[in-house]
Amino acid sequence: MTKKAAVINDLSGFGKCSLTAAIPVLSVLGIQCCPLPTAVLTGQTGYSYYHCNDLTEMMPRYTDAWAKNEVSFDAIYSGYMTGPKQIRYLLDFLSVFQKEDTFFLADPVMGDEGRVYGMYSLELLSEMRTLCKRANLITPNLTEACLLLNEDLTVFVKLETLGEQLSYAEKLAYALRSRVTEGADIVITGIHGSQTAEPLICNLALTETGVHISRTPYLKQGYSGTGDLFASILCGLRLNGVSTNESVDTAASFLYRCISDAVSENIPKNDGVCFEKHLGELIKGGLYYDQKH
Ligand code: PXL
Image 1 (cartoon, rainbow, N blue to C red):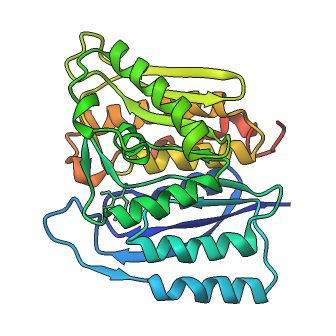
Image 2: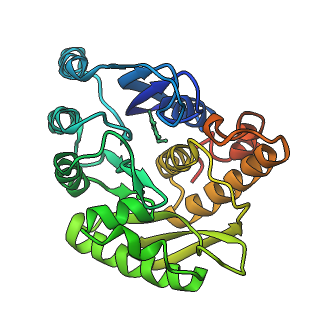
């Protein structure tokens, strides 16, 4: 039977992020994506002009209707939340739909490259920590990892080499695993030294087998939605029985191809990467679709 994932994230008309990343990725991996939109935006918040229609008060109605219809989910995957109240509603949602064998991926979206997003507040951070305690996998970038651990955001951006940032990320991953989660898998995304001679971008996974690092060429461009594509691939592949480490490698190499195209096509960073024509590469001849793992 087709597996189902409830995806709690926003719907942005432009930016190829959040639900517009999650729906195609999960679908190509053979998983039904059931969207619970946290907000509808004309475009992601990096654009100079956007309007946002907040759907906070719709959230308990989703929980209510889906519970009454007795639906269930193989996975729950959360991303961009407009404020702390949304996370409290999400915790209510989890108390109904998160069962023993439900895979819960929390992407603690709060900022990037040492800066916080506009919706960030200390109250949101505190609720995000509560959410991470319920997760099987969390996918913070370095900024979000630091926020979750109360680390100074100005420290990692000054670490010049990739090696220094990787050692720092490893330390953060162990701290996240024991202090912020209840032993969840941790994947710290988008690690690159600030002045590195080695143009590589890494993702560091900490699982029960230890530390695993993916390394792909760094094209020195950050694009909207790459973290969401990454987490969506992890969610889909993990549901299809692929290990966290292998999922990280697949996601990293997929993103490298999408980012390369965006760079050669001179796509503005707010518009996101060219992922559409690469989607088919995620299913490698039906291997994941057939859920053979
Ligand atoms: O990709 C993270 C994200 C998701 N949703 C919205 C955003 C952002 C990042 O800026 O603005 C609306």
